[in-house]
Length: 187
Image (cartoon, rainbow, N blue to C red; front, side, top):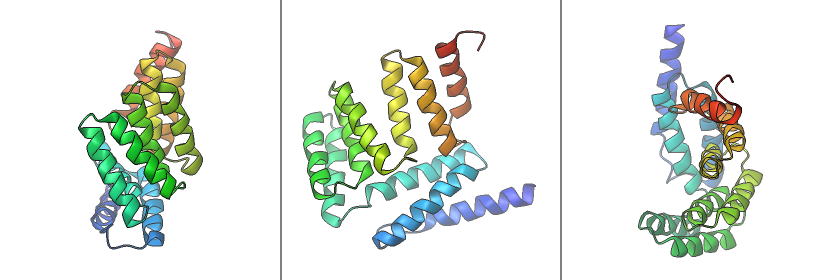
């Protein structure tokens, strides 16, 4: 079993080394599919974390060069705490490419940080309509539900995240914590 895990880990690391920028949209989508498969079979949290990071980067670059540039600008605005600017920029990216799930997800984060929880949830719904395996959207949904003390909602969202990325960092302990809060000490 250990040689198989080592081989799998080696293949995952090779997949992570694949350059994203020089690829066509079809190649990026194929790579994203492979990374989603890799998330389900990642043998460790460390490898899962690296695949998650690379997949998020790939999703950010799914659009045209103009949309990718807008996404980068929106992320900078978000990092700087300029939530309204980030919302505007992500909205522009969505206007240019309404199929880009990650634009909706990033706008959801900006809206949530700006205090628009309902708008954030709507954008997460749009994200998941376009990419139902967007584990990061489920992570954001968990955070929103937990902040509202909707522990059952947070637990359900985290379960969905783990169905996509079973070895996400701290995944099982977070699930136990949310289950305890949602269903009580005896759960």
